Image 1 (tube, rainbow, N blue to C red):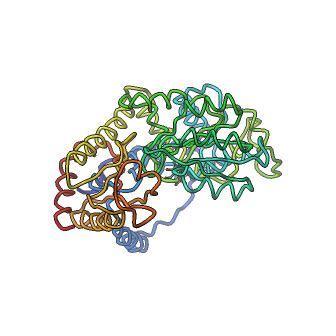
Image 2 (image 1 turned 60 degrees about the vertical axis):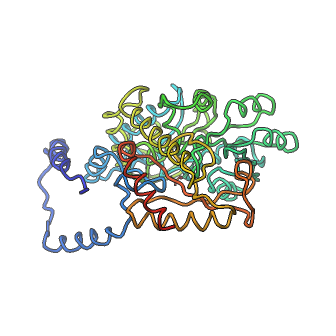
Image 3 (image 1 turned 90 degrees about the horizontal axis):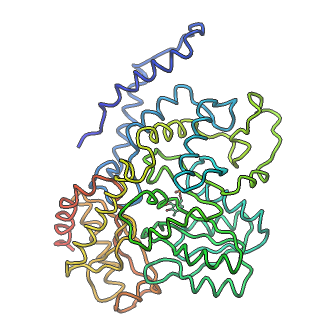
Length: 447
Ligand SMILES: Cc1ncc(COP(=O)(O)O)c(C=O)c1O
């Protein structure tokens, strides 16, 4: 399957429209030297061939999703201006577009009032949320589940906050009883709940965590970097739906448009329920804010320079695919989840494989059948390689014994077991399921 190039014609039209806005300026020469540029660009294209085919439906491995063509074009369009969303001085239109795009995300979560902005990605977004949490609860412990993204621990180290891991249950969700044990013993300032863990897409039990907040009074940050957009999906299990329905009660939320929001990399988003936390960002910059009395994005974000192009791309994508339940964007997420459920059903009914639990969102975890953790790990890695030989690209993930032994009765000759993991995060994965299954079975013959 070739790369989609047809839409490039729109870029020229859009550039001409953009140009109209600056037509009153005197001409200035720009040297175009296609003969010199061409070999450089073609060399770059050759170098880029050394990649897994992330854009193709047979890539069903890590958390990688191609941007929507409109996001790609809008990003490129903005590059002719190259706005900097630190301040209106650097990117007036793109700053306004960012505020609109972020308000649309906040609205999706049920917040009409919020403070928030885009940033480089989930790690930075979580860092800001934890930084604010630490300012409000100085010196107090931050807790997250054993399946939370690894960066939470590292970020608390950067922020100088104590960190504690909460064990997970058999479905790789935070164990609310274990959380309460810690809350009884220790002064916890912030609980990080993950709605859609990186490894399995597990959704932490938000209603239970909120009930504990009533009793213990901590700050609640939700890392929905991966799963946040699933709030729009209509095909979630009741328990998952209930967690998403209570998301608006969090103090802060992170979601990554560059994961399920069809955006190029460099697009995370952090949101705070209480806009008053903006006071912690206050700084005096002697050189940046001259063009308006409005709050500039740089006055409410940790980073200084940021790509205005990311905001333009997100804004354009939202225009095409608004965040509404039952809408086209929501249906595409539902398709991802249906694909994951369909693959899981096939795997579950096949004696050659073992499964841990059904996908809660669109990530499937399984392994070739074997009797011991060591053999399962070896066969998983071998199947990963063999599948790549069939042009089917999966991922491998290690799971700790304390989660897996709740489901699998196997010999434990290692403290963790490697399984296969597939993020079915392209809507087309649903149509490609038979092809994926066929190649997976084919690959298994050689393992
Ligand atoms: C739940 C979760 N949080 C945070 C992150 C980190 O996001 P980023 O890679 O955009 O920094 C990830 C990345 O996969 C994630 O899945």
